[in-house]
Image 1 (cartoon, rainbow, N blue to C red):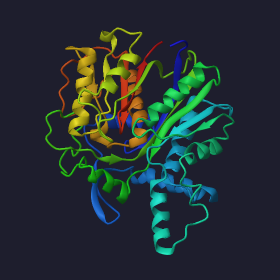
Image 2 (cartoon, rainbow, N blue to C red):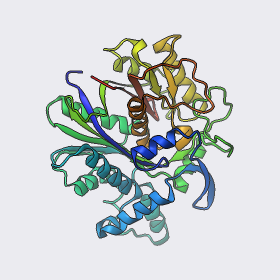
Image 3 (spheres, rainbow, N blue to C red):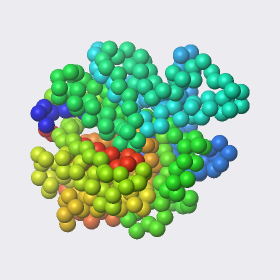
Image 4 (tube, rainbow, N blue to C red):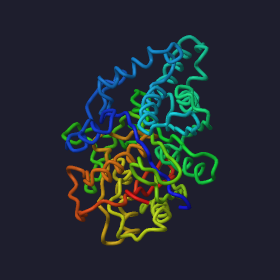
Length: 385
């Protein structure tokens, strides 16, 4: 990379909680947040935000009449963005915003559609409050940002694509600071029904309903979670940097099926190799995998890692066994996990996966994300540039 990209803050909003100290403490506890909950008229395994955090969302909704009509995905993004900017110490308003979502205003869209089926009409604000650009626009409005506002959906790799966009703007000299991330509120009956129709959703409510990174599982075990996560990116070296983005990669598989990736995840092989152009393989200490908890998804990514790194693999982990798959927000929640491990110099593994290659120090971590159709992103984060 031409110039270092500093991560000067990360803030998240998920089943783990809403501040870095709580999130880190929760990661140290080998207990999942996946529970069985009634969604609509059916019961499903999900990883919801806590009741305390949900009350903060409601307080935000009630704080401004303009916020009453917004979807939870937007409100989650606003809360996480406020915290990220505050922690970074951004006191001016000149920064870009790029926040994405896989599904966008899912709950609100379903609500308006049901009303349309019943009455043949929709509320006045149905269209503007369910468009995808809604997220970055409202965050920029809330933060009084005067920079560019970008929104996008690239399925489950959305948040890491936002990181790519932030890097591009900063490296091009078109901005000095960029707020990037993803937000998702997918715990709706229709969204869960879609995942169940794909036959990838967990059905067994045991100690660990989502078996992400269990390479011996015989049943798919993906579970949906909700949340948002944002990072503040700044050009150059900074005293308050939590970590640095030192490499990035991206690739897309040739489509063989509308939701699958190849058996050895060629997209991940390409994206990881691209991210690792300027670093020896043995200096990569860990990988936060996408690992959605599906049989093929987990195995194909693992095979890709084997192809790239050979016999001596970095330490491998994922957080989806704990907080479910948060779709568009998942990549940034992965990045947050990586930065926390770098800061605390402690690896957080998966309770039912024995790490075969423990490392004494954690200097460089690859963070992976991939979406339907095999659109992979790999971000290399390091504790120094």
